[in-house]
Image 1 (cartoon, one colour):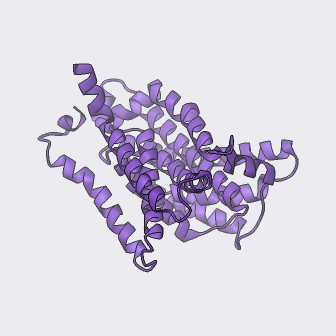
Image 2 (cartoon, rainbow, N blue to C red):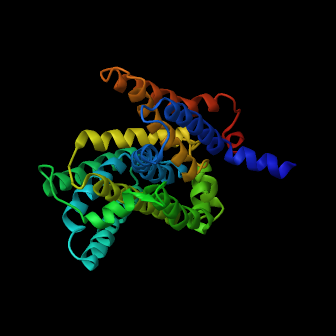
Length: 326
């Protein structure tokens, strides 16, 4: 019985995010003008997956008790880069995809090195690196343009068996390839330890630097994956500053909605995915119920504020930091 209790406490945030998403999506589907169908599910999936990738990227850093304000700019940079590289023959496309993902990982690794060896606060370091990444993106695409291989783009944004969204399947595959191995590795367990208490982790001999480096590197890789998929969805690249900032802010709301504590050491990338899908569904609900577009940013901002405040409300119930993790 105690095992079930501990399991529930550990995954409570993820389960809550799942319930919120399911309820909101059912309301959205039941009120959609076209009704529940394969095309509606595909469209919702394609939009939700983009934020889910960025939210996963954010969650890895937040687990270490940090925050990455450059994920949106890595997302934008890789989108612009993919519009240059993911073209041509099948071999060129494969090499282009590898190059784009490698650039995302390198951006994350740079963030990690600045935080670890530069000893800067993550919020300061990633604001600076994010500005650099956006500058590179703007140099690549001063104006929207470019293209992408239509065959692979259609394959990854279409439907499998005429119903299952291919983008959703790709996201699940990324979870098993990236998140599951990391969460079960020494570096993954160390990331949770660092987020819980870096001092205690250091005194216990936990590889702090390796944990942070892997967390930031994989964060960049996941953000780069999101930028790559954005290119598949739009067939173009654009250095959109507002879009990059929006994805950064929405990723923070998503991880909190998904049960990832901003204090670190608690939550999972899977919860962040459900948080992202729930947050994206909010925008879809506003559209379905014909909410005035001028008021939509205000409403989403209120949701963002409430989501971030959830962590602070939870801390009011604990007497010391260790109670937060039990």
